[in-house]
Image (cartoon, rainbow over all chains, first blue to last red; front, side, top):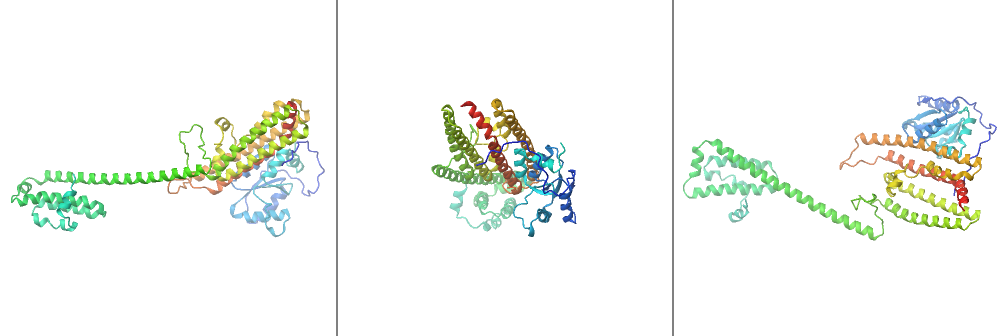
Length: 145
Length: 344
C-alpha cells in the first residue's frame, strides 16, 4: 500500500557529496567512438544531466521530453545495440561497482544527475510527480530559475 | 452428355489402345483429332481427367465405327471431299467446349471440397466454443451491439481479464455504496481512512489486472474494449488520464487551505507534464511499430507477424503508465479524504 506523498516545497539542502562542479547542461549528442571509456565518463562528469538511452527507444524519448519540459537541456548519449555491453560496463564503473556485472541497476534509459546515477524512467517519473525533481535539478546546476 | 454407360457396355480398355485404333478407321480427320486429344491427355498427368477424355474419344469412334459397319462412309467421304477448314473449326470448337466443360467440372469439385472442409472447421469451432462456455469462460464479443457474436480466437488471458473485470465492477459498486452509507452515518476519521485505503487498493488491483492483460494482448488493453463507448472516448493509454481525475477533484477543494490547494494544483500540473511526455513516447512507439510493419514483414497467410521488440515496448509502456496511475492516486488520496470529509 503506497503512502501518500505530500507535495511540499523542497528546502534547499547544502550540497553534500557531489564533488563535481556543476556544468552547464549542454545538448550534446554523442556517439560512442573508439575510445569509449573516456567519452562515457567525460559526458557524465562534464554535464549536469546525462541521459543514456538506446537509439530510437520510446522510453528514452519520454525521459528527454520530461526533462526538456522542465527547461533542462540534457546531454544525450545514444547507445548502439552493439555497444550496449561496453557502455553498461562503463556506467557501472562510474557507479562504483566492481566487476562490472550489471545487478540490474543500470537499465536504459539511465539518467545521471550531477555526476551520479539518478535512476531510470520510474525514478524520474516518481520524483517528478512528488515534486522533488525540480529542486534536484537545480542543485545539480541543470536549472537556473 | 453422359457417356459412362457407353464405357461400361464397351468394356473399356487402357487408354493407349484407343490411340492405336486409327488404323481401323482409315479416316484422316478423326486421327488428327485423336492426335490433338492425345497431346492433351499426355500433358495432363491427372488420371481424373483421362476418363472423360477417353469417353469422348470412344464416342467419336463409336459413331464412326457404326458408320463403318454399315459398309458405307458417307461422313468420311464428306470429310475428304469438302474443304477441311470449316470442319476443322467446328471440331476445334467442340474440343474447346469439352475442355471448358471439363475444367468447370474440376473447379466445381474443388469448390465443393473447400466448402466441405470449411464446414468441418466450423463444426469444430462451434464445439470448442460450447466447451469453453460450459467451463464458465466469458467470451467477450468486445463491441457493443456487435453484429458478430464471435469476434475471433479466444485469448485465455483476455477471457480471464474480462471475467475478473466483471467481478471488480461488482465489488466497486459495493464499496461505493458502503462509502456513501458510512459518510451519512458520520464515521470517524480513522474509519474513513480505512475505507479510502480499501478503495485505493481496489483500484491498484485493477491496474495490476490491466498490466497482466497487457502482456496477454496489448492491443486489446489499448483499445479499452471492455469499456462502454463513452468511457473509451476518454481513454488514454489503457485507462483514464490522471490529470482528468484531478481536474474533477479541484472544484471540490474550496475548503482546503491555500497550501493544500497549491499542492493539489501542482500535482495536477505534474500529471499533465508527465502525460504529455508519455503521449509523445507513445507516438514515437506507434511510428516505430508502423515502420516495422511497413518494412514488409508478412508471412504466409497474410498475418502481420508478432514484432517482438516493439510490442514488448508497448506492453512495458502500458504497465509503466498503470504504475504512474497508482502513484498519482496514492498521492491524491489526501485530497480525496478532504473532499469526502466535506460531504460527511
